[in-house]
Each structure stands twice: as structure tokens, then as C-alpha cells.
Image (tube, rainbow, N blue to C red; front, side):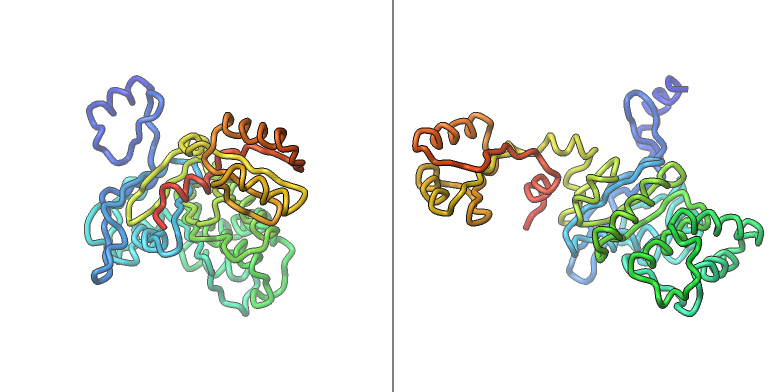
Length: 326
């Protein structure tokens, strides 16, 4: 089968449904090819192209206003693209048509519900609306409420916390067993406990559905995403796994923590060019291990005591700041 896929790809490498990976074929649930969208004179997406492999969590990263939500709406067929092609599970997305949306679950950053309903009543309503058989609705609701930790919740949705609403939103988005789950900034307004709950749920369902995870919270991406793409000026400027992307950062640099502000200022005169992070901390970004050892020699020579000298590891945040224009 692997040989067949290899040969098939060699002949049909232009097919958007397949990505080449380690000598075989990987099914792409979502593909965008040269998609552009403008609002007046503002070109928000410019020949945007990327694909999302089956059973992965794909981090779609960009600054606020970078075009992430516009991309989500185009995938859902809610707004009309200017050019390009979007396919979901092999089917082309058309503006105003809902055929491909049968394959998609969607979690907005602020999901909206009928607040007078309970969680169970709301999911029953959604299931009936989509024509699911009653017995299947009952089975699926029990499964999903357990998944999102709302099995025993009897109060009306209007009394739900923000985190509970997001968890109910995930249950609703998964009700029809979608091939693709789109999450648009699902953790942006949650506290650390709420964020952890949502991330744990998303991690647990990737074997059943592929997830497009749009966010600007890079720590969330590092925690759950298999692949990542940076969106800037309407294009993907960098993509790959988290580990692959970290390796592309410049030299990481180092940080020194002093015991007093006076000692930090003395050292700053000896080795200018540092970045003051606090009264006691100074960092030297994009510096090598050898340069850190030189700094330690200076500390010893001038007998300046420090709390710590530490090499900083490459981070996704550093790479983001390097490649995404301010």
C-alpha cells in the first residue's frame, strides 16, 4: 500500500487531498490553495495555502487581526472568497452552501446558546435540528456530556461560567461526529483552570476528529498541537511541528539574575547590549553558549555575585516574534 501511495503521489502530486510524508501518503482533511480575500482596499488573505492532516491538532497562529477568523468563515462558507480553492474531506467549499458543513464542527470564541435551556436540552435541540435519530441523540449526548464534565449539571445555561459554556460548545460541535473541528480562539478569555480543561478535552478527541486550532496563545499551541502554521500579511510564513520550528530560532541567548540593582548596573557597563527585564534581571538575546561563558568570566573577574546565569531555550514565542512583522 505504501509503494502504491508513493507511485500515486509521483503522478498526482498536484492533488490537494494528499501530502507527502516519509515515503507515504497522508490524507489531508482540509486544504486551502491560493485563497485570497479583500475587504475594500484591505487585502486580508493573499494566496493563502496550507493543508491539515487527518487526526492531528493544527495550530493556526497569528496576531489579532491577522485573518484567522476570516479564514474560519471562508472554510465554513459564510463569506465569499475572491479567489482560490478550499476543500473539506475532498469536497469543495462553496459560499452559501452547507454541504461541506456536514463534515465540520465549529466552536466560536464566544459560543451563543438558548440560556433558558439545560445543557442536555440544548444538545437534544441541536440533534433534532440536524435530523439525528432520537436513540442516537440520547447515546451521543450522554457520551459528550461525560467527555466535557457536564453529566450531572442540571442548572440552566444562563448560570454557566465562561469555562462551562466553552465545554458545552465543544459538546455541541462534536454532536454530529465531524471530520473537522474548527476552534476559533477557544481559550482566549478563560482563566488557567478553564484553559486546561478545554485543552485536555481537545487533546482527548483528536483520534476521532481533526482539529484546526486558531489562537494567539502560544503556550496552548506548544501543549497540544502536532503541527503549526504562522499567518502574517495574509500568507503562511512558516509551518511545521513545534520541535521543527524551535530549531529554526536564532541563538537563544542567556539571562543573569543579580542580588542587587547596583550590581546589575555595574555589569551592564562591562557588557553593554543587554535587555533589562527587571531591577535584578538582564538578558542577552540571540547569544551563543560561548558568549555566555565570556559573561561568566567577567562576573568572576570583577567579583560580581549573582543568583543565577541561565541559557534560555528556544521558544515558539521567540520564533513568532522573529518571523511575524510588528
